[in-house]
Image (cartoon, rainbow, N blue to C red; front, side):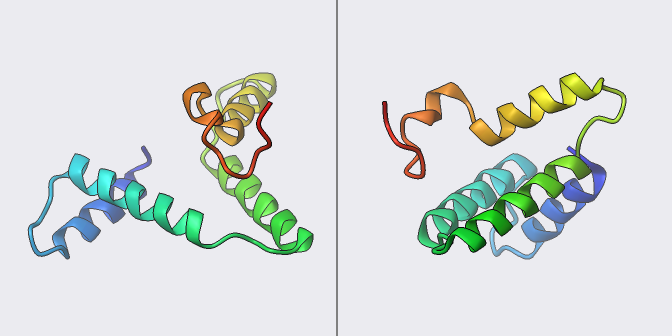
Length: 96
């Protein structure tokens, strides 16, 4: 995890009443993100495309520049597709 993100997580944690540790703070932030992600969904195709473009740029920023372009593309696909155990529960994908 990049240093700036760790610092942001720790700053967030210090602002909480119970001052959670790093792992608990990350767990809570992920929970908040997952909750808000299911509550707010882009409605139009242009909004969905804009969200895809923003995610694409965010992934590119954190990509490992020492990896080959093929490996970077593979990692990006894995991030976008998500872990296999979660693919069946995604609501934005049709089930097969």
